[in-house]
Image (cartoon, rainbow, N blue to C red; front, side):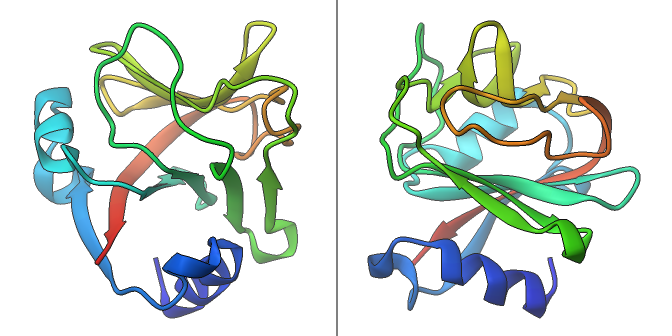
Length: 161
């Protein structure tokens, strides 16, 4: 992410996080593609920003309020949201609609944010290669990438300190 991305994302954050510093917890470019590494590096961190860059240069992700941990169901809070930063002319933010509480889901096979009716607002497979973004009831978002299915270039997780 560049300074312009950070500046735009800061405007989307809940007020109590706007003045906090950011710390990179996990990056597939430096930490590899292990789900175990992902869970170890992000353990006990909340809230976090999940930032994805796809192979076509689109940058998007999610703000989530709970630590990433393996769960049997959805968890999180209504402060969660999805966002798109690049391409700049398509930047947007999608907040909770109140239709369901499918904020976060994570297990050994994938992580996702937003859902409903078999759709995922943002879904990333455990190989950190394939992703899916569809309209979700949770956020009523548009697909975040160039198409519903996309190829991941980099995934980053940021926390606020």
